[in-house]
Length: 168
Ligand SMILES: Nc1ncnc2c1ncn2[C@@H]1O[C@H](COP(=O)(O)OP(=O)(O)O)[C@@H](O)[C@H]1O
Ligand SMILES: [Mg+2]
Image (cartoon, rainbow, N blue to C red; front, side):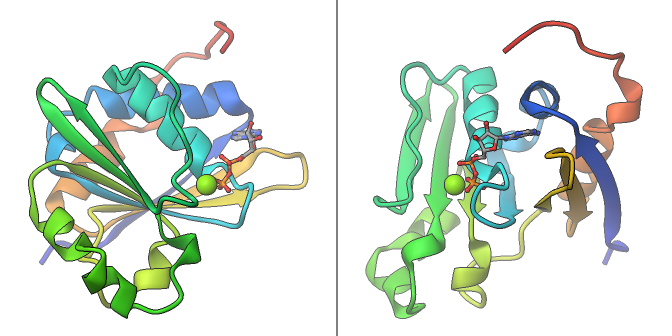
């Protein structure tokens, strides 16, 4: 069992969020990763997912799955499932909706509000906990629970990347 790795980064604006997503998108192993996104409403969970999906090549409008609970994406070499469990109040809904099967199938899983289905979802490879700071930056605590998560966490190290200039 690997020691849990934790790192904190700051995304000072949405461009920084986009850059993080772009670095993450090129990591091998992402196609079988489960990323859990924690943080209050408005913390920036969906924004990160949108930038990540865009960087992976998802075209068109990327909807928040707040009402549908899950939005699937099929790319030529990658299946992606974007969950938002905010509206789930009874973990039994998890089984009824067939989410167990989705988590057992190949593909990348991204989940907002994973705490709503605690005990049902597997352990996330990487947990991203987003917090809005006083200056509206996002302080993000990354916790790797698996070897894959540790690889992704190291690969996304912001200190390895020069300052960005481009706009959104
Ligand atoms: N790093 C950031 N710095 C400042 N604002 C951000 C950042 N990331 C996201 N935002 C803004 O904060 C809001 C986050 O909304 P959203 O992503 O829907 O939050 P959540 O899914 O966590 O409820 C968006 O308006 C987005 O433009
Ligand atoms: Mg959201």
